[in-house]
Image (cartoon, rainbow, N blue to C red; front, side, top):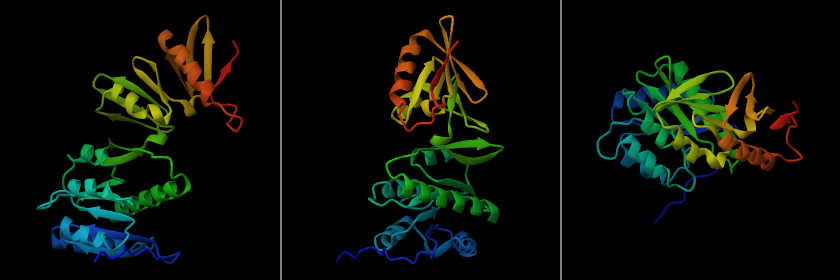
Length: 265
């Protein structure tokens, strides 16, 4: 008999979390830390991915905190199974190894924590889970990708919607947000294809921009450029027409008039 997953929850109950780790001390410690966070409600534990899947068949969890290296089905395998759920819980990896960050990006993990877990870093992960849950509720049609990046020796995740433009650096790219930049090992052409539907367009052989971040389209003696914040980026001749067309199509009556307008010169 299939048991229906529990869905009822009090409005102020907090996150429902599942912790998965084959090492009992690590499992107990992470469970205890989560129980100290007022934003977290119920916390369940599983010593293997198989046990976790049995729990996930009966309980609707908001987030799964799981180790990566486990006997049998490992954490990455568990995340791939969860990706097929109609109501997929978020995944936060908790591991002693930093080399799986790119794999975590591929399975769209919300965060990536290194053992031993610091309480303040775990608190940041809970905040990210809550923020992502809020984005799902307010904009369910927006499948915002997360990208694993290294900053000061710490792996963190940046939302694609935060990225305003991308500059190629050989086999790497540098992602720019409103406040910082991050180096990522991926070809620019890969991001161009993957992010085209999200409003990113090629403006130069080495540059990709988010249409919604363009403040001005400038034309001066046949040379075209765009302004994004304080940065001005050149637009190659071969990409000028497509960029103009995309900006016009992106415009709407309800859009901020400062976005994507062409400045008279």
